[in-house]
Length: 184
Image (cartoon, rainbow, N blue to C red):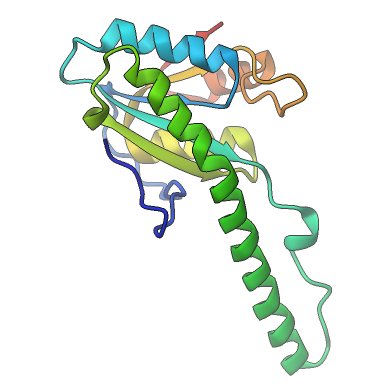
């Protein structure tokens, strides 16, 4: 099992380099829903005996609050610098808190996959930051060289519905050369 340590950043790289996509390299977008649990059981049972398959479980964090996106600014250069430094500190603190709150979703997803007999040494856990949810997933698919993206149709009630029909449509439209599995 490969996971980022709690002391390292667990955010997916924002690289735009397109590694060669491999159909044996799967990205599964996960949340804490029963639909995700069913998808993990399906994929794990289907592929647990295929030794060359690797899986990355990918969870997208909530968007950063608007008040942490920019400070009010100042005409005084010293004050502007202080405001910028404080904003960066506040952003880092918020991201660390979000990581701490959301990382257990990946750990639970790993346990669900493990229940199927899928070898955990072929699983990587990653968090991504959502400015735009679909763009975050697309960036990770492209940067990671994934040949297959697995999402579910339904997310948690009241959640952002990462896996809604509109998002599945947009992903299928914007993905090129990548298989998209939309599971229910």
